[in-house]
Image (cartoon, rainbow, N blue to C red):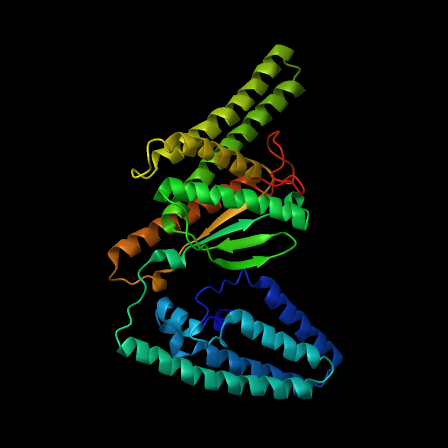
Length: 361
């Protein structure tokens, strides 16, 4: 997978896992159908040579903005998903003929070599002309939303209903942080089944939303511990009034925790927001807290993919500091997600975050 990133500034192994598995399945089927040992060895050698060509491409070390510019110019044959699709096509249509697959892989390798010549020339020209690397961390930050089938039921209407609420939440958080609506929000990748969506959003919104989610996840961890205590009290036949007070405490943990999360989000609000707009955004922050709470309670995971050290210019200290903060946020969010576990059963009594074909205005 690492060899498929020559031009793919958006390529993520996790987001492309299904494509890779499809290629692997086609290859396994081919090897099962044609057991000629010499041809199998030759095919593995040919694929290995293709991999080494990709890994050694000088364009791999070009700044992400240069690779993005080359890709947008049309030299996109070296993008991970495209290469995976080409490999799957070769292995599938040659499902009983190793000799044909070997010839097609060699042909693909020659195409890649030709494309690399163009890409390398374009990359060198851009760098010679002083094309500056994009110092904005925004284009390198990724938000992942992993929705289990218990939430979207692998159904269009349920998925659409969830995405509408997600969109509203992202728009509201963006306005709170930036005092205005978002522009483009590129989709990095998406998959069906257990629905996964990866978006590129501003690092400031990412930080706000990440801390917002961590705070709400912490509320559910507290509720889970309180429920354990109540269950132990019930097992030991504590008086009913004591049990009821424990349950009220759990409910207050949720109510107070979500209100505090919304208040904390508003504390980060952009000072340029019109005073008359702030009460409306405070209400929006509470709705966002409800949505994130319902999502977390139902098993939805939120992930932050920060830029790597290699993707941020060392000379851009502000970008490097922001990237470091994003990596710290990603680690904190991952730790909280691990602590929550799979959540096959809801932690608290909340409505599910979708309503079938229900829509919101």
